[in-house]
Image (cartoon, rainbow, N blue to C red; front, side):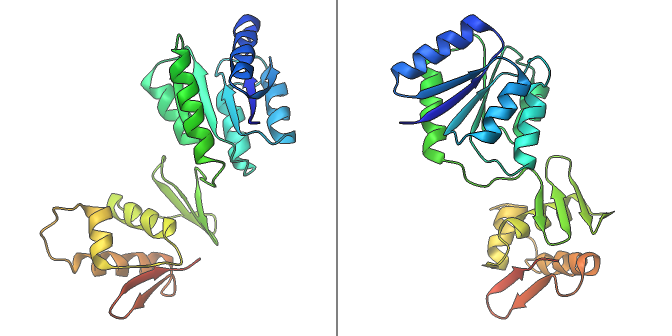
Length: 220
């Protein structure tokens, strides 16, 4: 049986969601305030959380950010009447997995929940870390040992790609395809230029050249 947490301050909607999810085979807990919702999510192991944004005491943004900061990776579906692009971007950047606006199709809601449950609670931090290095992809900023790094947009993109693949050997062609694009027809040695730039800013041992294969990023 899948366990779901519904954090919704409108009692009628919360009751309706509980009844509908229970009919689908979920075991459901309901929290009517943000504080209660955060407590439930911290204390119990859920397969998915349905989280409203506009909540008393603590809003959905704060709950999502707090859980991800505490490395709680339970899939979160934001369920809200707020349909502004800025709200959706902020929610997803904070670590939410999906966003559905009210009113919604119940069939679509259940399908999205099934997709989130299949995905599971894989680690997907909003801020990437590798030793003393931290990178926030949404803010396009990076820090090394508490000192913010001055990086170009391309350097940030390359660094993000390398952090996400840290420990792996990635070829020059793979880097070009992901950091530049599939149709890049310039000099492939541009990768070496940017690798050198990152080494200057991160330290010479941060990126290892694996002769004949590519590059491996290590923790700084």
